[in-house]
Image 1: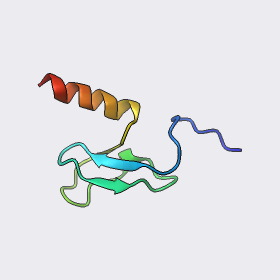
Image 2: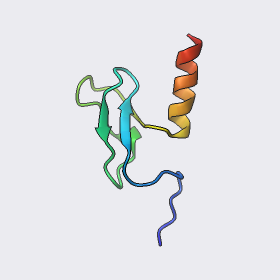
Image 3: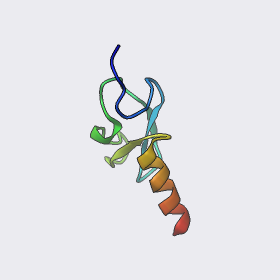
Length: 61
């Protein structure tokens, strides 16, 4: 069985940090390597550690 290094499971969504657009996560492709199909922005895995940090930073603004 393959170890999941990020702690994330298959499925879920990638979310754009610029416009909030969501796409289905593609197995084997990290969300950070995806570009948003609507605005071209970088994407994060929804619910990931980095997504949580982004949401906290957004709340402080």
